[in-house]
Length: 171
Length: 175
Image (cartoon, each protein chain N blue to C red):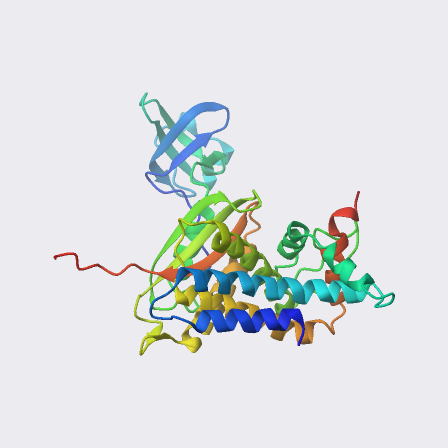
Protein backbone atom coordinates (compact mmCIF):
# COMPACT_ATOMS: atom_id res chain seq x y z
CA UNK A 1 0.00 0.00 0.00
CA UNK A 2 1.39 3.43 -0.91
CA UNK A 3 1.86 6.18 1.67
CA UNK A 4 -1.00 8.12 0.05
CA UNK A 5 -3.36 5.15 0.42
CA UNK A 6 -2.26 4.58 4.01
CA UNK A 7 -2.95 8.20 4.85
CA UNK A 8 -6.37 7.99 3.26
CA UNK A 9 -7.16 4.90 5.30
CA UNK A 10 -5.90 6.65 8.42
CA UNK A 11 -8.10 9.67 7.68
CA UNK A 12 -11.11 7.41 7.26
CA UNK A 13 -10.30 5.64 10.55
CA UNK A 14 -9.98 8.95 12.43
CA UNK A 15 -13.22 10.28 10.98
CA UNK A 16 -15.10 7.22 12.16
CA UNK A 17 -13.97 7.58 15.78
CA UNK A 18 -15.98 9.32 18.43
CA UNK A 19 -18.77 10.46 16.15
CA UNK A 20 -20.93 11.35 19.07
CA UNK A 21 -18.30 12.99 21.23
CA UNK A 22 -16.86 14.79 18.20
CA UNK A 23 -13.29 14.91 19.49
CA UNK A 24 -11.62 17.94 17.93
CA UNK A 25 -8.28 16.15 17.87
CA UNK A 26 -9.58 13.19 15.85
CA UNK A 27 -11.59 15.37 13.51
CA UNK A 28 -8.73 17.79 12.87
CA UNK A 29 -6.26 14.97 12.28
CA UNK A 30 -8.75 13.33 9.89
CA UNK A 31 -8.94 16.54 7.85
CA UNK A 32 -5.18 16.95 7.89
CA UNK A 33 -4.60 13.32 6.87
CA UNK A 34 -7.14 13.72 4.04
CA UNK A 35 -5.11 16.58 2.64
CA UNK A 36 -1.81 14.76 2.96
CA UNK A 37 -3.27 11.66 1.32
CA UNK A 38 -4.13 13.73 -1.74
CA UNK A 39 -0.84 15.64 -1.58
CA UNK A 40 1.16 12.40 -1.60
CA UNK A 41 -1.00 10.85 -4.31
CA UNK A 42 -0.31 13.75 -6.65
CA UNK A 43 3.29 14.40 -5.66
CA UNK A 44 4.16 10.70 -6.16
CA UNK A 45 2.57 10.88 -9.62
CA UNK A 46 4.62 14.01 -10.42
CA UNK A 47 7.83 12.32 -9.28
CA UNK A 48 7.05 9.20 -11.28
CA UNK A 49 6.54 11.29 -14.40
CA UNK A 50 9.56 13.55 -14.03
CA UNK A 51 12.19 11.26 -12.56
CA UNK A 52 13.50 7.73 -13.18
CA UNK A 53 13.41 5.29 -10.26
CA UNK A 54 17.13 4.60 -10.55
CA UNK A 55 19.44 5.41 -8.88
CA UNK A 56 17.54 4.56 -5.74
CA UNK A 57 16.10 7.54 -3.94
CA UNK A 58 16.15 9.92 -6.90
CA UNK A 59 12.39 9.76 -7.42
CA UNK A 60 11.73 10.25 -3.70
CA UNK A 61 14.01 13.33 -3.72
CA UNK A 62 12.05 14.71 -6.66
CA UNK A 63 8.84 14.25 -4.71
CA UNK A 64 10.39 16.24 -1.85
CA UNK A 65 10.97 19.17 -4.22
CA UNK A 66 7.24 19.86 -4.60
CA UNK A 67 5.87 22.92 -2.89
CA UNK A 68 2.46 23.12 -1.26
CA UNK A 69 1.91 26.72 -2.32
CA UNK A 70 2.92 26.03 -5.91
CA UNK A 71 0.53 23.07 -6.06
CA UNK A 72 -2.18 25.22 -4.49
CA UNK A 73 -1.85 27.86 -7.23
CA UNK A 74 -1.84 25.26 -9.99
CA UNK A 75 -4.88 23.56 -8.49
CA UNK A 76 -6.72 26.86 -8.56
CA UNK A 77 -5.81 27.31 -12.23
CA UNK A 78 -7.14 23.85 -13.17
CA UNK A 79 -10.32 23.95 -11.14
CA UNK A 80 -12.72 25.23 -13.76
CA UNK A 81 -14.25 22.55 -15.91
CA UNK A 82 -14.21 23.08 -19.68
CA UNK A 83 -11.23 25.47 -19.85
CA UNK A 84 -8.43 24.82 -22.35
CA UNK A 85 -6.14 27.68 -21.49
CA UNK A 86 -5.11 28.09 -17.90
CA UNK A 87 -2.60 30.08 -15.90
CA UNK A 88 0.42 28.07 -14.72
CA UNK A 89 1.14 26.82 -18.25
CA UNK A 90 3.84 28.09 -20.62
CA UNK A 91 2.73 31.18 -22.53
CA UNK A 92 0.54 30.24 -25.49
CA UNK A 93 0.30 26.61 -24.43
CA UNK A 94 -3.15 25.13 -24.83
CA UNK A 95 -4.31 21.97 -23.07
CA UNK A 96 -4.88 18.99 -25.39
CA UNK A 97 -8.46 18.69 -24.11
CA UNK A 98 -10.85 20.88 -22.14
CA UNK A 99 -10.50 20.31 -18.40
CA UNK A 100 -12.69 17.35 -17.52
CA UNK A 101 -15.14 17.19 -14.64
CA UNK A 102 -12.72 14.77 -12.94
CA UNK A 103 -9.67 17.02 -13.25
CA UNK A 104 -11.64 20.11 -12.21
CA UNK A 105 -12.87 18.21 -9.19
CA UNK A 106 -9.40 16.95 -8.26
CA UNK A 107 -7.98 20.47 -8.50
CA UNK A 108 -10.85 22.10 -6.69
CA UNK A 109 -10.77 19.56 -3.86
CA UNK A 110 -6.98 19.90 -3.51
CA UNK A 111 -7.43 23.64 -3.03
CA UNK A 112 -10.26 23.20 -0.51
CA UNK A 113 -8.39 20.50 1.38
CA UNK A 114 -5.22 22.54 1.71
CA UNK A 115 -7.18 25.49 3.08
CA UNK A 116 -9.02 23.17 5.47
CA UNK A 117 -5.76 21.53 6.54
CA UNK A 118 -4.38 24.90 7.63
CA UNK A 119 -7.52 25.67 9.59
CA UNK A 120 -7.60 22.19 11.15
CA UNK A 121 -3.96 22.35 12.19
CA UNK A 122 -3.67 25.98 13.32
CA UNK A 123 -7.00 27.75 13.77
CA UNK A 124 -8.15 26.97 17.29
CA UNK A 125 -11.06 29.39 17.02
CA UNK A 126 -12.67 27.22 14.41
CA UNK A 127 -14.78 24.28 15.48
CA UNK A 128 -15.13 21.23 13.26
CA UNK A 129 -17.74 18.54 13.56
CA UNK A 130 -17.81 14.93 12.43
CA UNK A 131 -19.71 15.86 9.28
CA UNK A 132 -16.73 18.06 8.36
CA UNK A 133 -14.37 15.14 8.89
CA UNK A 134 -16.43 12.71 6.83
CA UNK A 135 -17.01 15.33 4.16
CA UNK A 136 -13.26 15.97 3.70
CA UNK A 137 -12.43 12.27 3.81
CA UNK A 138 -15.01 11.63 1.12
CA UNK A 139 -13.56 14.48 -0.95
CA UNK A 140 -10.11 12.89 -0.68
CA UNK A 141 -11.57 9.51 -1.66
CA UNK A 142 -13.17 11.15 -4.67
CA UNK A 143 -9.77 12.50 -5.74
CA UNK A 144 -8.32 8.96 -5.60
CA UNK A 145 -11.25 7.63 -7.63
CA UNK A 146 -11.16 10.43 -10.21
CA UNK A 147 -7.39 10.22 -10.55
CA UNK A 148 -7.66 6.57 -11.62
CA UNK A 149 -9.38 7.68 -14.83
CA UNK A 150 -7.89 11.15 -15.18
CA UNK A 151 -4.27 9.93 -15.06
CA UNK A 152 -4.84 8.25 -18.43
CA UNK A 153 -5.99 11.49 -20.05
CA UNK A 154 -3.99 13.74 -22.36
CA UNK A 155 -4.21 16.54 -19.81
CA UNK A 156 -2.77 14.52 -16.93
CA UNK A 157 0.93 14.89 -17.88
CA UNK A 158 0.45 18.63 -18.31
CA UNK A 159 -1.26 18.96 -14.94
CA UNK A 160 1.48 16.97 -13.22
CA UNK A 161 4.23 18.98 -14.89
CA UNK A 162 2.51 22.21 -13.89
CA UNK A 163 2.40 21.06 -10.26
CA UNK A 164 6.19 21.07 -10.14
CA UNK A 165 7.26 23.55 -12.84
CA UNK A 166 4.28 25.91 -13.05
CA UNK A 167 5.79 29.05 -11.62
CA UNK A 168 9.06 28.72 -13.54
CA UNK A 169 7.65 28.21 -17.04
CA UNK A 170 7.23 31.88 -17.78
CA UNK A 171 10.16 33.42 -15.91
CA UNK B 1 -35.25 33.51 -13.89
CA UNK B 2 -32.32 33.15 -16.28
CA UNK B 3 -29.39 34.10 -14.08
CA UNK B 4 -28.37 35.93 -10.94
CA UNK B 5 -29.77 39.41 -10.53
CA UNK B 6 -26.95 41.91 -10.11
CA UNK B 7 -29.14 45.02 -10.36
CA UNK B 8 -28.53 47.70 -7.72
CA UNK B 9 -30.87 47.77 -4.72
CA UNK B 10 -31.97 50.52 -2.38
CA UNK B 11 -29.76 50.62 0.70
CA UNK B 12 -26.62 49.23 -0.95
CA UNK B 13 -23.40 51.16 -0.35
CA UNK B 14 -21.31 52.31 -3.29
CA UNK B 15 -18.43 54.50 -4.35
CA UNK B 16 -18.68 56.60 -7.48
CA UNK B 17 -15.70 57.41 -9.68
CA UNK B 18 -13.35 59.92 -8.16
CA UNK B 19 -15.85 61.27 -5.62
CA UNK B 20 -14.66 60.66 -2.08
CA UNK B 21 -16.78 58.83 0.44
CA UNK B 22 -19.46 56.22 0.49
CA UNK B 23 -22.96 56.72 -0.84
CA UNK B 24 -26.15 54.82 -0.18
CA UNK B 25 -28.57 54.03 -2.96
CA UNK B 26 -31.89 55.74 -2.25
CA UNK B 27 -33.70 55.10 -5.53
CA UNK B 28 -33.21 52.63 -8.37
CA UNK B 29 -34.42 53.33 -11.89
CA UNK B 30 -34.27 50.40 -14.32
CA UNK B 31 -33.29 50.71 -17.95
CA UNK B 32 -35.54 53.05 -19.92
CA UNK B 33 -37.08 54.68 -16.84
CA UNK B 34 -36.02 58.30 -17.11
CA UNK B 35 -35.14 60.63 -14.27
CA UNK B 36 -37.79 63.36 -13.97
CA UNK B 37 -35.13 66.03 -14.48
CA UNK B 38 -34.39 65.91 -18.21
CA UNK B 39 -31.17 67.89 -17.72
CA UNK B 40 -29.66 64.81 -16.07
CA UNK B 41 -30.17 62.51 -19.04
CA UNK B 42 -27.08 61.16 -20.76
CA UNK B 43 -26.61 58.34 -23.27
CA UNK B 44 -25.55 56.14 -20.31
CA UNK B 45 -28.81 56.82 -18.44
CA UNK B 46 -30.87 54.57 -20.69
CA UNK B 47 -29.22 51.50 -19.11
CA UNK B 48 -30.53 52.42 -15.67
CA UNK B 49 -29.70 54.97 -12.99
CA UNK B 50 -29.72 55.34 -9.23
CA UNK B 51 -30.02 58.26 -6.85
CA UNK B 52 -27.44 58.38 -4.09
CA UNK B 53 -27.03 60.05 -0.73
CA UNK B 54 -23.68 60.38 0.99
CA UNK B 55 -23.57 59.01 4.47
CA UNK B 56 -22.81 61.69 7.05
CA UNK B 57 -22.99 64.80 4.84
CA UNK B 58 -26.33 63.91 3.25
CA UNK B 59 -24.95 65.13 -0.10
CA UNK B 60 -27.09 63.83 -2.95
CA UNK B 61 -26.12 62.59 -6.38
CA UNK B 62 -29.08 61.99 -8.69
CA UNK B 63 -29.28 59.86 -11.85
CA UNK B 64 -25.94 58.05 -11.64
CA UNK B 65 -25.68 55.34 -14.32
CA UNK B 66 -25.54 51.80 -12.95
CA UNK B 67 -22.22 50.94 -14.51
CA UNK B 68 -20.49 53.78 -12.64
CA UNK B 69 -21.19 52.17 -9.29
CA UNK B 70 -18.43 50.48 -7.34
CA UNK B 71 -20.06 48.36 -4.63
CA UNK B 72 -18.57 48.45 -1.15
CA UNK B 73 -19.64 44.89 -0.32
CA UNK B 74 -16.93 42.65 -1.80
CA UNK B 75 -19.12 39.59 -1.41
CA UNK B 76 -21.99 41.08 -3.40
CA UNK B 77 -21.56 39.09 -6.60
CA UNK B 78 -21.24 35.80 -4.75
CA UNK B 79 -24.07 36.67 -2.38
CA UNK B 80 -26.40 37.46 -5.29
CA UNK B 81 -25.43 34.24 -7.03
CA UNK B 82 -26.18 32.16 -3.93
CA UNK B 83 -29.46 34.02 -3.60
CA UNK B 84 -30.25 32.97 -7.15
CA UNK B 85 -29.30 29.34 -6.47
CA UNK B 86 -31.44 29.33 -3.35
CA UNK B 87 -34.42 30.39 -5.44
CA UNK B 88 -34.02 27.02 -7.24
CA UNK B 89 -33.83 28.08 -10.85
CA UNK B 90 -34.29 25.45 -13.56
CA UNK B 91 -32.08 22.38 -13.45
CA UNK B 92 -30.48 23.24 -10.14
CA UNK B 93 -31.26 21.59 -6.89
CA UNK B 94 -30.83 23.62 -3.75
CA UNK B 95 -31.16 21.15 -0.90
CA UNK B 96 -33.97 21.85 1.50
CA UNK B 97 -31.83 20.84 4.49
CA UNK B 98 -29.79 24.02 4.00
CA UNK B 99 -31.33 26.45 6.42
CA UNK B 100 -29.07 29.44 5.83
CA UNK B 101 -25.74 30.52 4.41
CA UNK B 102 -22.92 32.92 5.24
CA UNK B 103 -20.73 34.77 2.76
CA UNK B 104 -17.59 36.46 4.04
CA UNK B 105 -14.58 38.14 2.47
CA UNK B 106 -11.15 37.46 3.97
CA UNK B 107 -7.71 36.30 2.95
CA UNK B 108 -7.05 32.58 2.76
CA UNK B 109 -4.08 30.90 4.46
CA UNK B 110 -1.84 31.85 1.53
CA UNK B 111 -2.88 35.51 1.65
CA UNK B 112 -5.12 35.39 -1.42
CA UNK B 113 -8.13 37.71 -1.17
CA UNK B 114 -10.94 35.19 -0.95
CA UNK B 115 -14.64 34.76 -0.47
CA UNK B 116 -15.94 32.02 1.77
CA UNK B 117 -19.39 30.59 1.39
CA UNK B 118 -20.62 28.43 4.22
CA UNK B 119 -23.96 26.69 3.94
CA UNK B 120 -25.61 25.96 7.24
CA UNK B 121 -27.40 22.66 7.36
CA UNK B 122 -30.12 21.46 9.69
CA UNK B 123 -28.34 19.98 12.72
CA UNK B 124 -30.15 16.65 12.72
CA UNK B 125 -30.19 16.03 8.99
CA UNK B 126 -26.88 14.17 8.74
CA UNK B 127 -27.19 11.94 11.77
CA UNK B 128 -28.93 8.62 12.00
CA UNK B 129 -28.62 6.68 15.24
CA UNK B 130 -25.89 9.04 16.31
CA UNK B 131 -23.74 8.51 13.20
CA UNK B 132 -23.35 10.81 10.24
CA UNK B 133 -24.85 9.42 7.05
CA UNK B 134 -22.25 8.82 4.34
CA UNK B 135 -24.89 9.13 1.60
CA UNK B 136 -26.10 12.47 2.84
CA UNK B 137 -22.58 13.84 3.14
CA UNK B 138 -21.80 12.63 -0.40
CA UNK B 139 -24.92 14.37 -1.67
CA UNK B 140 -23.85 17.56 0.11
CA UNK B 141 -20.34 17.36 -1.40
CA UNK B 142 -21.82 17.06 -4.89
CA UNK B 143 -23.88 20.18 -4.27
CA UNK B 144 -20.84 22.08 -2.96
CA UNK B 145 -18.88 21.13 -6.09
CA UNK B 146 -21.68 22.48 -8.32
CA UNK B 147 -21.70 25.74 -6.39
CA UNK B 148 -17.90 26.04 -6.73
CA UNK B 149 -18.15 25.58 -10.48
CA UNK B 150 -20.92 28.19 -10.69
CA UNK B 151 -18.80 30.69 -8.76
CA UNK B 152 -15.73 29.96 -10.89
CA UNK B 153 -17.86 30.78 -13.93
CA UNK B 154 -18.32 34.32 -12.59
CA UNK B 155 -14.66 35.07 -13.35
CA UNK B 156 -14.08 36.73 -9.98
CA UNK B 157 -10.66 38.12 -9.13
CA UNK B 158 -10.91 36.41 -5.74
CA UNK B 159 -10.51 32.83 -4.68
CA UNK B 160 -13.65 31.14 -3.52
CA UNK B 161 -14.16 28.47 -0.89
CA UNK B 162 -17.44 26.67 -0.48
CA UNK B 163 -18.13 24.60 2.60
CA UNK B 164 -20.98 23.53 4.81
CA UNK B 165 -21.43 23.36 8.53
CA UNK B 166 -24.13 22.60 10.97
CA UNK B 167 -26.50 25.35 11.96
CA UNK B 168 -26.34 25.78 15.70
CA UNK B 169 -29.01 24.17 17.73
CA UNK B 170 -30.96 26.33 20.10
CA UNK B 171 -29.45 25.39 23.43
CA UNK B 172 -31.50 24.74 26.49
CA UNK B 173 -29.80 26.85 29.14
CA UNK B 174 -32.72 27.10 31.52
CA UNK B 175 -30.92 25.32 34.34
